[in-house]
Length: 235
Image (cartoon, rainbow, N blue to C red; front, top):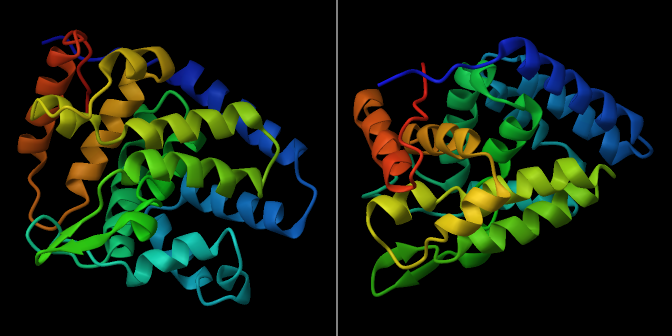
């Protein structure tokens, strides 16, 4: 298959535009913290280390940052997520995303989606007959993501783009498993499929024991089923 032709110059331009817009909306302490986290998401080899350290600060006891801290005490299925709580998974996903953010069409949006993709799990996780499940965490997560970011910055376009990636981040699984929760038409209309595929790969790799070649194959299958099989990620 042909590899994706990533326009790195254009991607870099988009990234700079997003950073400028975010900085232009800066007006309160939470927004300054957003800029700080955004810099580490954009530049660090493992951004999760810095963000985890920040969680000891009092501001993470307050809304909206408390939504992230809750993930430290939100359990996951040990079968599907042997790494433990949701925050452990998010850290693995964020650090994986940092390794491929140069492939993103919009790195700030992509990295914040990686950080917030499972923000809905704290609200939706249940123990049903001995099974830990988090049904609808993607759609609930989109609403929480929008509320979270709206408290930190005023860039509605940025917020919408991150929210839509969170909303559709489970679709590689839904589509590949032929589950009824998928909305391919909506996904194609509302998101960049390149970004969904890239985030989907990082999400799958954010589990202990995942193998890169297997997850690349899963993403290729997902893209084919969505009718965009010519879009192949180049790692």
